[in-house]
Length: 103
Image 1 (cartoon, one colour):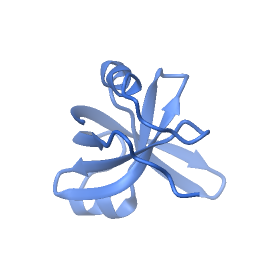
Image 2: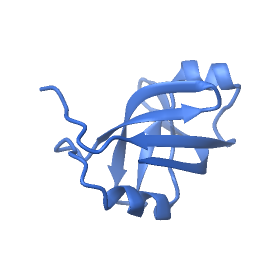
Image 3: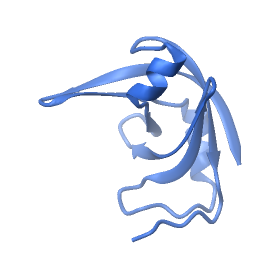
């Protein structure tokens, strides 16, 4: 299944550096939640993410606080697409039903 939405990149500051994420809208998260997709105990789901011309295999992580997921945005993607925290991006998430995790 393929889902496309717009989301704003946000920054999570940590003691050792920071990480960038995007949170898809709740409606999209509800659609993903209805799929029969295996998730890790942490609630992460394997996806292929597409932002601009950047395509990568990654995971989205369940966030109960926002009732959505969050998608990590690597520095290489932000650089290639020339985006930063506070900017909106169009992202496509491809969720493969039956995706299994290696132990």
